[in-house]
Length: 310
Image (cartoon, rainbow, N blue to C red; front, side, top):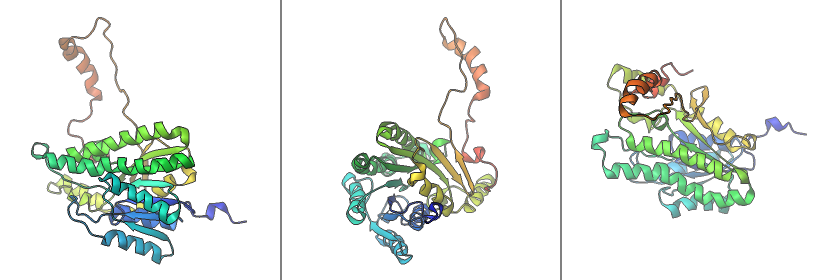
């Protein structure tokens, strides 16, 4: 009898990965295929800001998977369109007979400092980075419910979990995605469906827009360049597999060879005034007591992770 431990983690599984034509998404698709999954490679081939479109990235990744003996189909849908997003799941069922995992990796950037951010900058990023995952998840949910199993894997960001300059739209979408994942995990637990988030640290087309003008910014970018996208793929494969059947409602991070678990917001200080608070009492009593636990006002991920990737 074959040793179960040597079998591919995703043998017989069908995984749909959005934004899988380039960067992190491509590495996820290749790795899941190596682990035995049939992969729907979704990517409309747009520019970083969401403009344009071409079939090349998705078709190339799918062809590369097939060339190494795997199963893959390219889908060019824009996840921001509900009907187009549904085609990702329809292609999985049509071509491979089922859907077992959805990886919401697709994203665009429209970075600009807050006071210059336009309504279009806001809505375009929210539609792709937050509404897009909603659309794909909704399309997969009936299949997951019927088969009493399934895994949603969402790519969040420390831009949302911690904060970043010039990314109010992206940060809001990525933190909103954590809330969406949490709600899906709670609502779908009774039918055996799980939902988790990953915050990736990796050099890609998306992170290439990070400013690198000051010495501190340049050092941060150099650290990012040492973190390759392929380091994130094993965690995705695990979360999509049956081995993760009891792992849900979590937020993971991958930073080169380090995998971390993020906490959710929890109270860190509490103070009671039985007679009730006044604004003056808040200023004189509560704030001095709370101030040692305040988050740093200018905090970005570089302050939380100042050490070199390992």
